[in-house]
Image (tube, rainbow, N blue to C red; front, side, top):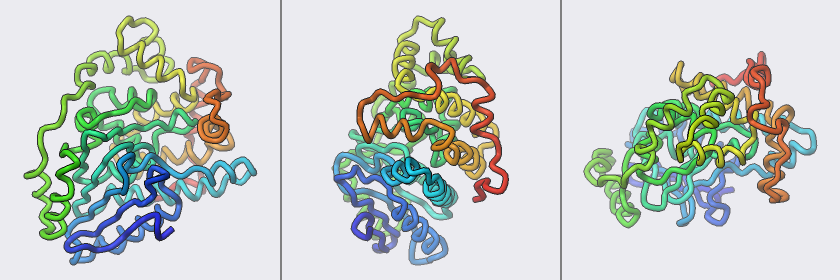
Length: 344
């Protein structure tokens, strides 16, 4: 595992480098624990002025969590491993979000799922031309998690619902517009900025170095998205989509057709809850209610089978169509867990 992540103090910076480029820097359970330990150690360390998180390889900062072992244990009837992984990962996500010092993240290539939980809770999130950020969990029977429901809730208008249920990818301009990132800087300029941050610990160097981002395509779609995704439930959204002749509606329907109906319905509810409370602990707690049940009562294992194991891209979801998800189905997945409730 030591080769998978490189953690050290370099000058004024606490540095975390993901080092699994051949696996698109997929986040393992052990890596989550190492990141959390580093955050704990650096929070009160006067030698660390800021935290810098980056990743090796050109293709991805982190394309998601390493879910192979979750699948294997879940198929064997052991749901506790996955629950433990998620609970510990979410605790790390909360500490990243609440960290008392600047956290600078350099986000190249794919930043998805668990990668969003590491890369998009920082205070200074930097994207480049290759950046592609998404919350694609509904495609494997999960919901946007790792605090993603709160990030989605904070996006302008109803972009959170749109991005959560479609899993649409955001380039650098869209990522900044949707508030998943803060700064645009061509990757060729990253090394010089890192050197300055390491030498000085002066976070204002990021503001001085960043340049104007590319145009955000999402900005042009904002009015349509707000109209189409303003419903209280997934069923409401489906009705609006079906009665629209806009290009946004057709694109959304195509993307949503790939995803698990139960996960999409719960994702809409989670974004609404996060928007009401705007609290990372509450968002993660609600997400965990779903993920803790996702193997036994949801579509997670089938989603992984279709996308990762058999790769037939033909999942057999519990609900045949998005409109088949009843309010009681959502309530069962998101009701409190009693003594097993996540506490962070």
